[in-house]
Image 1: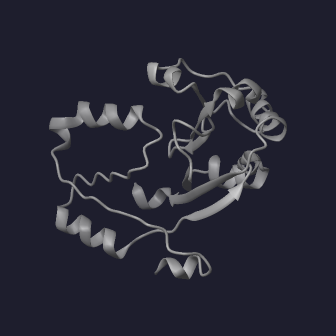
Image 2: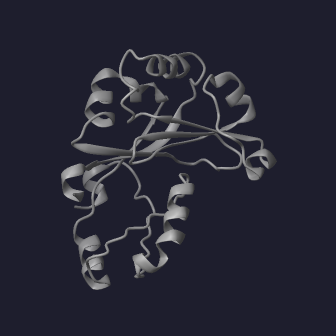
Image 3: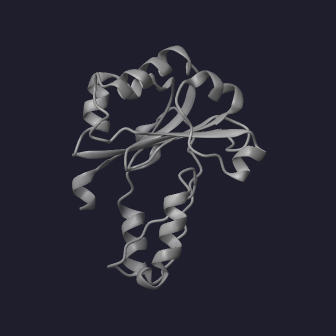
Length: 192
């Protein structure tokens, strides 16, 4: 289906695909480090170790999923129905990324497929936000950025827990900014 089917009043968004083939076993230490250490990448890399490049290209051309673009504050993530259906569900994984933001000059928010919510915040936002940041890298210090992470998929992070209530309070009282976001829910059954 075309993008116009899902978003009839929006202009098509630019998208790109780059398919590369490499031996994952030989380069595992390299790609695993790159993937695990860069949650704010805007590029998509798909590893399909058991199929050829031609089969992967054919599949990508035929079976494209859908995503949604919304503009909202972040408190929708913790609304009870949404939280249970998309964050804590074993049925799907939610992926989210703020758009029209620059990693060095804006507040950026990412929800990884593993359920970790990443915040790359400017100093002014971070000082009022209320969530503790991780250790700052040299680049973060240079751009005066603070990175905070919250594991929403953790067994300790559940409704009415101390960490849930703290994040909910922060979204409602200190992080009232509206973000433009891309969201995609992936059916977990399709990828197992």
